[in-house]
Image (tube, rainbow, N blue to C red):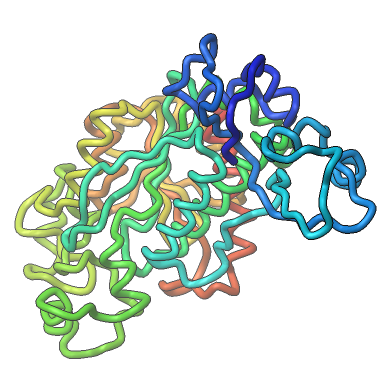
Length: 395
């Protein structure tokens, strides 16, 4: 919600007027000098939207404010050209509305266009969320990273490394919405006060690593050469629901130089709907963008969300730090997922992250069954994963 500065206003006053953390207001207006506000300057108030109201007979600012549990000055601030003592029937005013509800509904087929819509809505309501384009997919779609928080400890989550695992993006985005709601409404999640973690932790999120693969899995082949090549790779079948790779038929989670040669020797030798590791490591722009992001951000820990199996892979060649075991035990406690230290599978993002940075990295396999997992599992998966998201902040 945008407001305009009046004479004598301060950000501290807005914080009290709307009952929003001053730090969240400061972080939503990073280009503003809080000690030198100028009359007419636009200020963003996080956690609010506006609605319009048509004046009825007997209405006053005081009555409207009382009915909506608002301060009268909040109405005056949003309606600077209106004299509250001379309201006219039929006149339209703006009313601030605190957002206390989700705008993200993860329980639906979650493609790239839905992600963009939700990202736009969330960053509009919560302007303290920072976004950065870290690269582009093969087809030129933006790969978006979000950052929330002020802490030096950077915790990273990512989803949809595989096209047919798009439900992981939906889970991440719904939790992100709940996290932002808790911050702006001063609420807890499962009894945990998350406001201190905003100051202690910066959360880095890439909700959809493989947008081309997700769209292909959900919506079928696009027009043009990429769609034609995908059809050829898929042996002419128009059923792409099980497609795991990117649009070029490369498995992005087999693209990393962590025993890549072992995987290449036993996996498909040419582009395929799943498991082809590429002709060499880091050939695909999506995989390269994620590798560069890890180097730039220096994550304290990393969680890659996949499906399925209800297990958490947490080791690589004995290079994982001892604290990784403590962390994964907490993940198990809050989710019921089984920790597995080693598995005969390599060249994944988690493997490479542990190998290069010697920091805790986890591949979290959500749900049970055959990919793509049905949306009938969404609510259960979300509740299981909720504890993992929270534990990654405090562990």
